[in-house]
Length: 112
Image 1 (tube, rainbow, N blue to C red):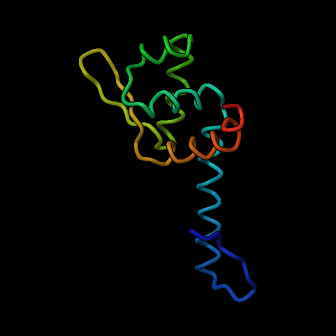
Image 2 (image 1 turned 180 degrees about the vertical axis):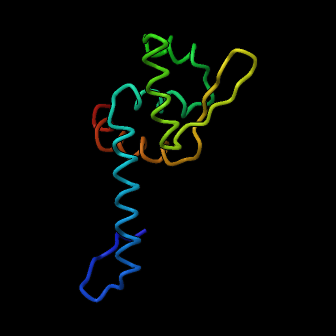
């Protein structure tokens, strides 16, 4: 997909669409800008995980993991599922996975 080119002859609707996309992208980037949230997404790429599993994987307290999951949920990046007393989380769609692949290519691929 090509990046939009902003020109003087764009309609107000086209500019509004670009501005809304910029706002959505900014919110997404803010949501993944925290190391803990980014690590949660990395773990969820491999499939659904319970809060307890995420605590163990991240070596973090339940309160900290739940706080980060709440932000990811607010941004629509993760979806909860309750089974009895256990809450499981999974990625809502493939946006985080695609972003993580890009981040990996930018920051980690040369380290291999």
